Amino acid sequence: MKKIIYLSICLCLCTYLQAQTNPVDGGNSALIALNKLTTDYTATNNLSKYKGTPYETEYFQRGLVFHNKKNLGEVYYRYNIYADQVEIKSTPPLENEEAKALNKSKETILVQMNGKELLLKRFTEKTGNTLQGYLSLISTGKTYTLYSRQIKTFAKGKAAKSSFEEDKPSKFIGFTQYYLSKDNHSIKEISLKSSKFIKSIDKGKQQKLKNFIKENSLKLKNEEQLIRVIIHLNQ
Image 1 (cartoon, rainbow, N blue to C red):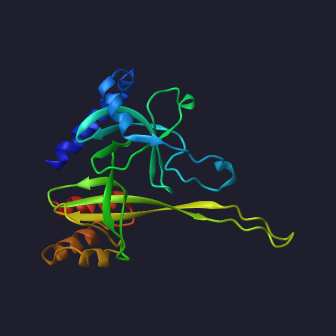
Image 2 (image 1 turned 30 degrees about the horizontal axis):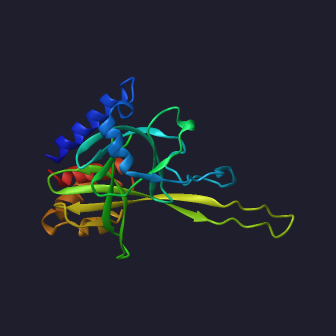
Image 3 (image 1 turned 180 degrees about the vertical axis):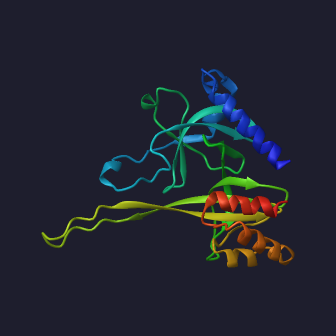
């Protein structure tokens, strides 16, 4: 059932993005509802002085916003990973509209350009810390659901101590974590080391999973190969 819903949403996104007009512009009730889900926001500027970016992409992309399973239409979004904040604009031309922040709500889903759903979830890191933030749904099935979490850290630059050295600019460093939920219960970060990951799965499935990973030479640090493992677990 989850697969059917997910594929339907992705198909809806593709159909929407092929349209020549923006539904948010003409749908009064949808526009009003969307406005209630946003607040004024000051976007991050002057990024040229930093190495890297706090964003997933620095330009706005098309996506769909759903709230309480209702399609509110097409928006232009940009995900600030460092701030864990989605910035949106409703109408082109993009440069003439101030970005607003999409209010964080468990009832709101952003379907991204790549077809993935960006969801607000409560999850637990390997350290035991429980947090709430955005996760991307990347694979779902009858038992296991796999999410990814993008993270950006900020490293402050250092001035050169002598003429023989160069200044080190401040920079954003990005990496990805992966989380797994069983039967829609708690969402926990997983290890990308095969041996540790296998031990975290039900004992009855461990040996078959070990054989599957070995026979196919799968590396869990590769997202596509990790998805293959989750699909196998859901069979």
